[in-house]
Amino acid sequence: MNLEQLDLSDTICAIATPAGMGGIAVIRISGVKSYAVVDSIFHSRRIKLADADANSIHFGIIKSEDQIIDEVLVSKFKGPNSFTGEDTIEIACHGAIYIQQSILKLLQQHGCRLAMPGEFTMRAFSNGKIDLSQAEAVADLIAAESAASHKLAMHQMRGGVAQKLNELRSQLIEFTALLELELDFAEEDVAFADRNKFEALLNSICHEITQLLATFSFGNAIKNGIAVAIVGPPNAGKSTLLNMLLQEERAIVSNIPGTTRDTIEEKITIEGHLFRLIDTAGIRQTTDPIEKLGVARSQEKIHQSDIVMMMYDCTNYEIEELKAAIDSIPPDKHVLLLANKIDLTKSKLFAFEKVTMHLEISALDGKGILSLKEALIKIVNDHIGVATADVILTNQRHYDALQQALNTLALVKQQMDHNISADLLCIDLRAAIRLIGNITGTIDIDTDILGTIFSKFCIGK
View 1 (cartoon, rainbow, N blue to C red):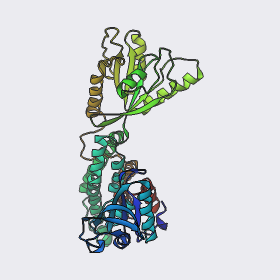
View 2 (view 1 turned 90 degrees about the vertical axis):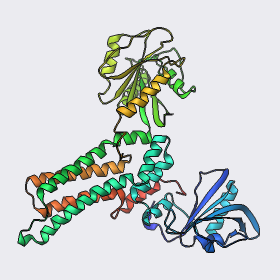
View 3 (view 1 turned 60 degrees about the horizontal axis):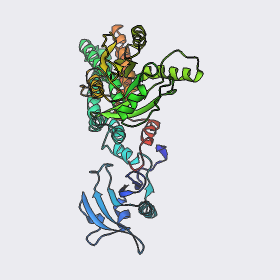
View 4 (view 1 turned 60 degrees about the vertical axis):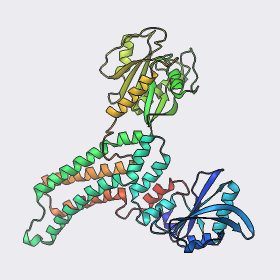
């Protein structure tokens, strides 16, 4: 989106509901001419929209000259008490594509232009209704695929992240102001900023930023799905387990080793958490070049996962090979060891240092699957990230800005150890303040950044 070419004084319109035919469609109009434009095509026996009360709904018809297009409900919102902060109208019409397009065409004929992706939300940001982190949370809320990701997006949209960042930024601004005040009285050699208190403040802020950064892996996993790699030797039952968890025949299953040549990824929601299940090729030594590629991809998915489900056939395994496979898993992964095929024989549970839990299952008839799901949830709650944190980062842009701010503040601490002058300290402090302000948009933001953010939104939002 090229923001420099957009005229934010225009009255804009767009379909706010998903594309295609449905029972009802909603068309949104925002801008100074909203009431006049809609009044020119909307006819009600009772009142003109321009004279109607704010936050009111009205029944009537949309007409094009003498042709009735549809019977509709029109909602009126008066700026600044609307989502965009402008006068806004929402037309609820029947969901036929012909009706939607006809109304859009009429609106354009009477002075509206089609909105760009994310332009309604961008206007809400421009008019001070939401900050930039809240605007990004709107997109996350629309894309939420689980109760957990919905909860995170709602918390951020209601200002949870912004409140914490504004607190940190205000503390830095206050002390930077004292340092800059000293510069105005440099000849009098007056100290307004207590260096010991400043060092304690820096340590506190750096600690809080570090804690926020530590939440990102968890927040990103909740937002995009917790990656679970299903790995093990050929014929361990990996594809059968995937099919059992999905309750559908998603992966091809056969007794021929090496049937799965590539990774298969599917999503499943368990107790409100989204998991990305990745069925991988059987890991073994092979001369088949295609199977070699599959094994290499399996190893790659292990490194990209949050949880590794290591499966083995409890009717046919070597304990040393099993231990070697577990030892090859990176130490930062949570390992669920699954003894499969207990419908055929009894298994023996082992204690391995790197294994979080060892479970017995039958991927074929479903024994132990409930315990497996409970184990996944327990790992999420007990181990992955910091699920109990008040504020959780989910946005890569926020993470990068905070990491840069932390590095800048670390530089300030080094400069203080070497008694660097206040004017030089202020340069880096202002840089850190700007980086934090970039997240919420409390300072001037580069139009390229805004264009990148809002261009990812759907049209109508």
